[in-house]
Image 1 (cartoon, rainbow, N blue to C red):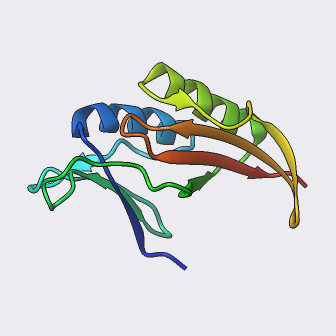
Image 2: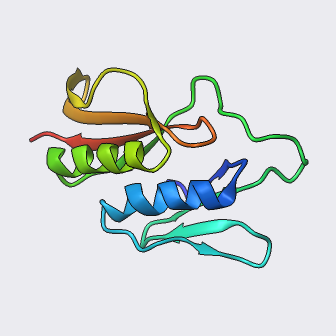
Length: 126
């Protein structure tokens, strides 16, 4: 459904450190910085990127926005959460754990990245 997601970041290096750590726990390679100073993470199904806003204003989180990353297991979601906390993220929502959803049980772990963007690791419990 999506070709890419790009989030605003106020400090690309701090955000890269954070995303290298959290995405590394899910099996992704460290991001690469392009000639415009943006950081990209590529997969077979799409691209995730961080950038300073092009309008020159500070990056800020979208109120009500959450970007979710697939975790293969609850253990991977927990490792993702721990890596995020150790690399400049802050916890938000409830602690990592199972939640009932209309599509079945989910194991969710939420963080805010160094720029305040809300992200989630999601494992579909079978």
